[in-house]
Image 1 (cartoon, rainbow, N blue to C red):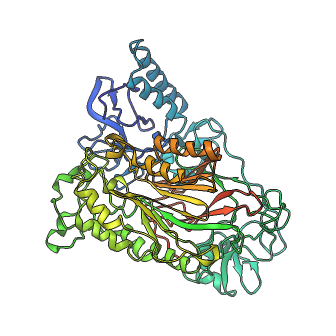
Image 2: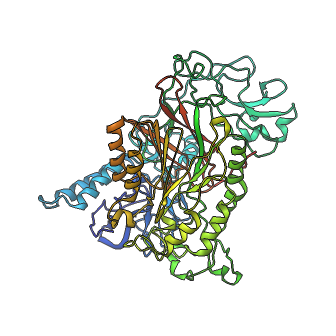
Length: 639
């Protein structure tokens, strides 16, 4: 990281946290002056806009007790702060303090800027401005009466804790939002029907009667519906009663199906079926002028970068407006505190924290197969395979990070023949599986050479995953066939294919610096995208989909813009990993869309490219989440 430093407010307490720009040190100080070796760095593993959301501590230092910064050198939260973390990898939703405390921090940053030389726009000044900007991005448990974060740190830990604090609140209503942001208007109360349900909400439906269960507890959530007590009145299932009128759609002309993707009936036990929440479906018959295709605001907050998720028009029940659909997931398995290996004699040495990385023997035969690994193997991959056999999904894309990383360049000892082979065997059963390169298995690995186009690490990745292609035809319901897939010779991490006038690209952009971004004569991602799009001389493409671990760099944007200037702007979706949001994020700026997937044990997303079938109609992107729980560390049990 750069050596630039900047000061922050004195006497940091449990309610004040500091955000830093990537690579910029933030020195906290107490009343006696600067505290050495207590730095908070922006996590280089997370190149996302919401820089205040993800922070990590240097491996070689611990947080001073009187500062209560909240991290120690073992990647654990300091006990007095009660901060939510997962395996020391990232820390989510750092909260700014009360309004007055935030003002003091702003004032200190402003004073620091005044003290800088007038003729320099230093990196420190840029970083200081970043802190000011990030204060507006932070989320906490906000008292709507006073417009301040809750005074208790635990309430600001995460949304779940905020809900608990609101239930006990005697001093106003608390909502988990950004500080200074007005609370979103609540949904309108659904009109009741005459059968015990509403016209919009799912409930515990008694199948024989097609009405909601009479007991409120059974209608509380899907789990309650599936317990034995709710089955005594006849077989029950969590769904929208089929006789109810469909949810309102934008400018409807003909009622649309309530569930755009056919649901698999849920058994009476704990597993749940893949039944995406109802989304606005295009109205009309799909190929006449009455059909309405547009994006809607879901009202659900994106946990990275702020703002609300959007949603595209849903597939029609018979999928005649679906060009292709596919499954995507990423950042898993992240297991590391487990002793699994090829040679039993070394297993006791596999489970080490990042701060103890040098204690991990190298080379080793550790495979790091824990709960994440088991979830993918026994639940998620079999689920996607089953759905693809049923016609839902043409291929599967993992967006990178198949090992736990270290947040440091070229020092991870987890990247070995044994761990790579473990992952190759894990994904081998996955149908039409493609893998994007992540930093945890490339530029963070011991042996990665940033000055050269290849090294033993990249050669190993390419031998295991650089030949993956489609091994079966796509579903007949969306057109069938099997497109040829092209990879860049010598950099097989980059690939592409075209299907039904959609250009798909797999890009080699792990988080952090790489050979391509720092030392290659030309960005090979840009070269491949530019040459591929240039071959479309008659401008026949209708949309573009980019798969990348982090957001594509500007050279790729330049290649896209060259094509758009020649052929017109196309809807372009970037499907990303790396950020580990608790729920997926789909955002839009002009015709550029960004979808960030969840991580760890979260269920995969199904992405559908929906095409307006009218003459000259365009492409739209729709996302269905197979695991609706707001969690990424609880393995879903699919029916």
